[in-house]
Amino acid sequence: MRPARPMFVRRLRWGPALVALALLTAGCLRFDVATTVAADGSGQLTVTTLFDAEVLEAFEEAFGAPADSSDFDASMPPDAVLSDVEVDGFEGRRAVIAFATLDELNAVAADVLVAGPDTESAVALFDDFAVTRQGTEFVFAATYPELEVEQEGEIELDDPGDLGEVEVRLTLPGVVYTHDADEVVDGELIWRFSLEGPRTLQARGQTELVAGFPDVAGNVHADAIAWVAEQEITTGFPDGTFRPGEVVSRGQMATFLTRALQLEPGSESFPDAVGSVHEDGIAAVAAAGITAGFPDGTFRPGDDVTRGQMATFLFRALALEPGSESFPDAVGS
Image 1: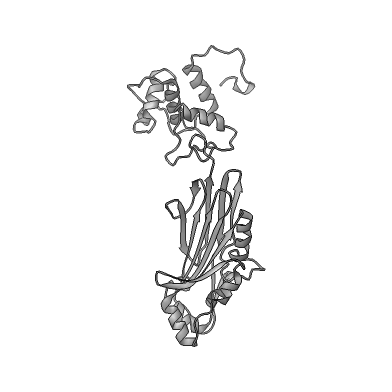
Image 2 (image 1 turned 90 degrees about the vertical axis):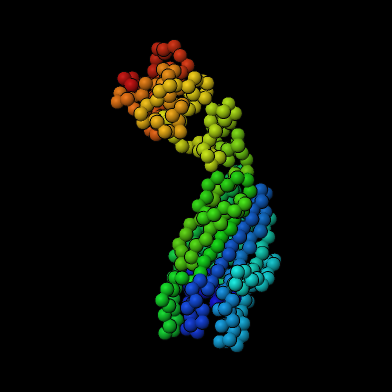
């Protein structure tokens, strides 16, 4: 559709006739980008540009010819499968582009979707748009800029930013364990945002799971994490991750010790532990004499457990014999 031609310079220039016929109708534009990636890095990229059907009718009546899609077609790779489409009262053009590797995907995205000084695409929308692989992890990152709208002629829009929307859909292999998508439907991540932007998009998926965790593969502690999971000392977080780079809280430490040592339940807890998800574990380690809490009578379950506290917990829990030497920075601790 020729009205989309100027998108590659990250601004829209509208002549007065098109402004009068089209942009007085809010939300007349749509751009849809969908990417499906398989574990071997192959897949397909689908790019769709759409205009409100009533706007296209008005355009044809005003200019005596239908809107021209040649710019869109010419910006696509030669092997793209092109077709006319109708979606929810919008009409436009779609390109389906197959790729065998992520390098091919990113090369196509750079030509078609990423705006730059040499870009001639009819639909370039993003500052960057790429899927990369780091071992068994797939990483998606894209940046959509703030759009500048320039009006040519004497007609001015009341709300030039309300032009329409962009929808980006992404399917990554394996388990997606972090993202900022607006919605996830049957494993497909969906971002929806207005054309004026700006917006960042990111997601990470893992094809190799360690003890069911998607964020552990390749970590130096992977074997130890797998072991504590197999022993049911940890179950990870509700979202299925383990988060090996995060610190351990005092409440979590109490739960780990309770499970590892199969401690008997305690009858009393600390006042600031009541209602905590780790209340039972805290009561158990207190009853076992592993912790006495702080001098003010609190346990502080949300505080980070220090390395010194961890040493004391384990010393008491395992009934270890005193050592004769320590570290120079532990003297007086």
